[in-house]
Picture 1 (cartoon, rainbow, N blue to C red):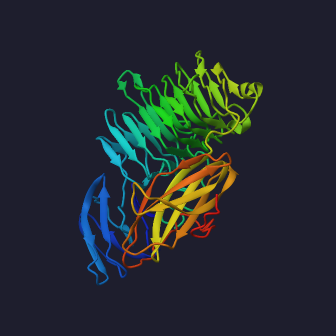
Picture 2: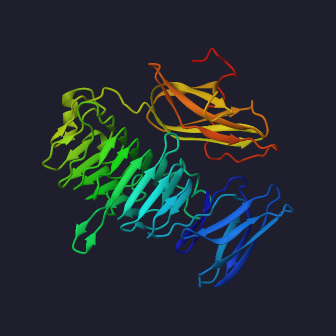
Picture 3: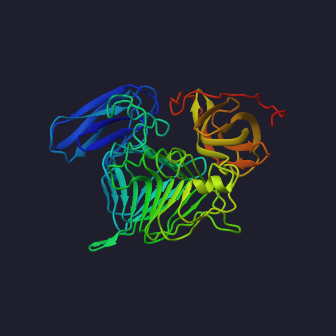
Length: 471
């Protein structure tokens, strides 16, 4: 990804084929502007959005190497420059205040300034969204945030410097200088349910299949990747990850969200901080254990800090330790951590699974955030989404890995003009199999070349097709 900073706005262009600027235009004041861009290889679409509304009609190249569109932009300042890149994706501009129900669809977004979801407003974030925050920026939710990720197609909130998700926003010298991501790059997500004086917010947060990383800047109000503060309704954090915060992984004050099947790990301070009158549910006895992994936080010290008078239910979780005394030594306050797990329950966390076309071949790309006892991935393909899948390959996994890993597989046995469906099945050492989501690929009649800079080349085809001797 690349971007151009235009004073108070960041204009993002999703670079899908070329890595060169095709044209540019200067905004010299109020008025209508036309950009001419060369487009020699294929017919392409160009759309521009501002504050969630389209400000330029779709424009398609005429097949002779030219495309143009007009912009009617309400900017009085002179000498603004916008570069036009070879793109068929939407150009997104995030506004600071969200005052009406809004849905963010799959794609990469850049938050250049604080985002506020106003009271009574619902922001829905769909699977495949990556939101990258500029330094010192936070999201404050006074209404409701609904994060609807999917297994293998997570929603990600991260630093602008994090090239693992959403591509390289800072490496071209157009927006930010290139540097590695670090804890505290941005502030975090504040679910603000304050009820005091003139303030009467809701602050509801519902997270499913979400990854939040590199937040927790201690100069902000959040002090965590995500902060549940006095929410009106009990939110939840399920099948999700909070990692690499400069302070807490999750903070909960005066409310009672539920945490299940999530990983809170490698945060600089406590993994979870609980304060005020909060009484969150991290797992109960019977058939409702937490199955969370809360480990390697606070430089190996306190994993959960309970500052309330309540006894927190945190039954059936993994703490990175195997004895009762070891776990107790790494928890502060009254916590029921009985029936703890002896191994990490998040055996394989699949954070992304996607497909693309190059030279008439299908390339599958996927990323894991953690692999425990993982033998590898069986790859299945069909021309019917709901039936008749055949295993075409097996890619060995990392077995035991607690950092992200990336894989790529090339399927050459496809026909032009056909539609194919794929899913992964990870296999652990005990033989347990877990199926991913299904991705769809339409192979064009005429081969095209797509730039797959999303992930580096790694772990290419490791088995012949077909090879029934694989696991």
